[in-house]
Length: 322
Image (tube, rainbow, N blue to C red; front, side, top):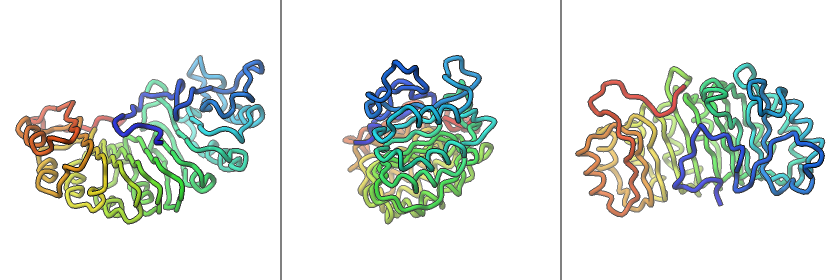
């Protein structure tokens, strides 16, 4: 079972402080009487520290990590949510290194959200990430990895036998990260979601970077593909129109970006999409005529065409950038 349903579109406003991976969330540190040992595997653990949040348990992420490993039976922990680490002043390396170093004490970890920081704490493009590759290397049984923030983000090609969900939310996704994902061997991956963003915030990827993903050779299990929040959404649509991987997808999302009639024309004249259960094109720049053509062409597909933007406006923008 995936962390999210393919019909849902998670928001970058979500803190994941109440529920994650189907579990109630507990934020640490807790008082001794809260019975942490008895609930170790029954909750998702949220690691969060900032001096700007009065509700934060600490302003030092190192103290939070120390408490977690000192007080929780981490051998039973299946889900972790990493929140703020004073992310506008410091990159995430200290958290990455600690979790990777303690991997032997987290043998049951299956779900990890890294950077569950809402805009009221830090805009998505202010979040300072780092090289997260070691998390995949240290946790070969991890099934779900979700990341928010593209600044400084690195993800090198790896082979990972267990990963089923990979989601990366950014206002600017580095092309090297896209190529790293595309060059990896992820035989169990069922759900891939990438938010590309814009060049002003580090989003320098192009549709050409997606070629290995489009071939599907390294993603034999992929069922749900989301290539979204792109200012080159038309180019992605053109690549999708002839991509071998599309024929075995159940759902496809090209939402949150600057899709225009030109991109929709590629979809209409390319390979059939009638096998899809869901096609999400929301937040788009399509004309009413093109929307009707899509609806007529895909009568049995759950087609999402909400949030139509002004099609006569020369300035087009993605849903999430800063």
